[in-house]
Length: 303
Image 1 (cartoon, rainbow, N blue to C red):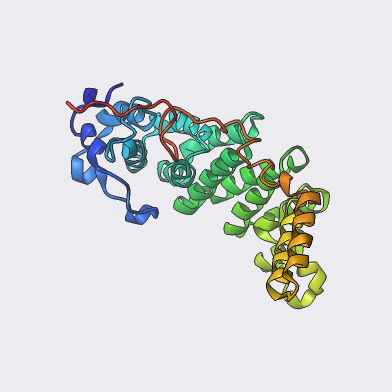
Image 2 (cartoon, rainbow, N blue to C red; image 1 turned 90 degrees about the horizontal axis):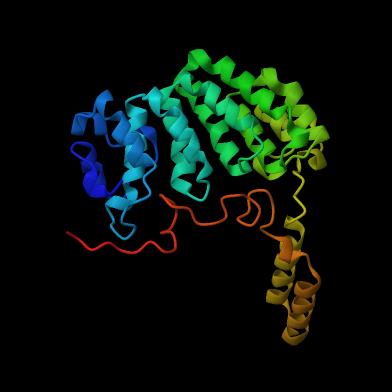
């Protein structure tokens, strides 16, 4: 609904401006400052998903962030499903960074919805990684539910052969953050059977070291080296050529070599992986809050 249809104290979030902090412990206390209570939850849910904001107003365009942060502080279980729907907005860095924290603040009531989201085929790998982040944050903020969160993350990783390497790498990262040694067999299978993006957590040897199950002395240098994804190869080749160019006395020859390599390389494939804008379903600009103002959104006339 239009911004001027919101009423205090929720309406005050429309003028808060750009958030200054990412860490949960540094978030502004909306509940204390504005006297927000459970009766304001419906309006906050609406504002968190608002599509009719003035995208050129430095206050209004950040209001959804303040709204969902306030919902987290209220531990608003009624907001769980609407917030899960916001995970589809994977073109917004704010949403992907903040929503896992909000789910963690709300707590264990989010577990079924986040697990269901991870099991769905439609969401992008980036969106699913944020859902997995929510499970991790619940385990961190509510240690009594740590084992259940680990079990759900492990179950998600067990489907690794049907998932993207990027998502599998993200799931391993969540388990490492929780020091989930009980998940080691599933993690090992994910590495050995693939696909796995080792750019996220390193090689299988590195994962064992991170879990405290081995030391670097137990492995060869080759085992400690992570495998780069295919799209990194042309980038590395180009970097090597640029390095050669910088040291070359024969500049015309070096430039010719660089040009030929650029033409023949597979660099054109860069950015077409599971997390790329061309592959995931959120590639088109969305209505609502994102990293930039959607096309067609015009500045409103001030009243």
